[in-house]
Image 1 (tube, rainbow, N blue to C red):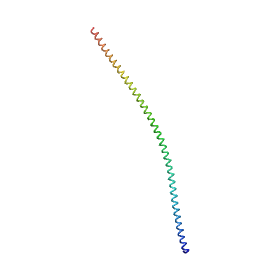
Image 2: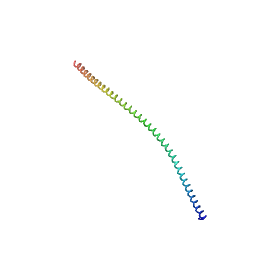
Image 3: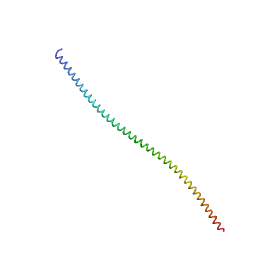
Image 4: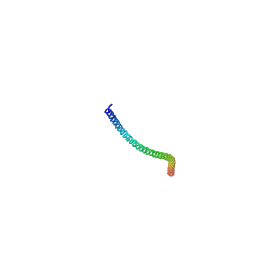
Amino acid sequence: MTVQENEMIQNTEKKSLISMLQSAEETFKLLRQQQDQLLKQEVLLAEKDVELAKVKSALAEKTMELAKVRTLLADKDMELVKAKAGLSEKDTALFGAKAALAEKDARIAALVSESEKWKQSSTLTRFFQ
């Protein structure tokens, strides 16, 4: 091999190595960009995780509030049931009082009727005397 051939081969090898180096640099740059994008996506994902945790916390608070409201509603329902039971007792007592009044009204009516009979019989007795 001649010196010229040797130089040509070395130049070709240098060009090849330079080309491979440039290609490796481009690949490295692309990998670096992809890594940066992945890091940005990881940051966004972490931010979304924080937002999700906040939403879950707010949901837990609302669930607790709902449980408190349901408890209050159950208490009010119990009070309503007790009040209705008390009203039923009062209705029963009122019905008994009305029955007693009706009985007294019937007695008064009977007494008035009896009184009218006495008046008529005493008027007739005086008339015939």
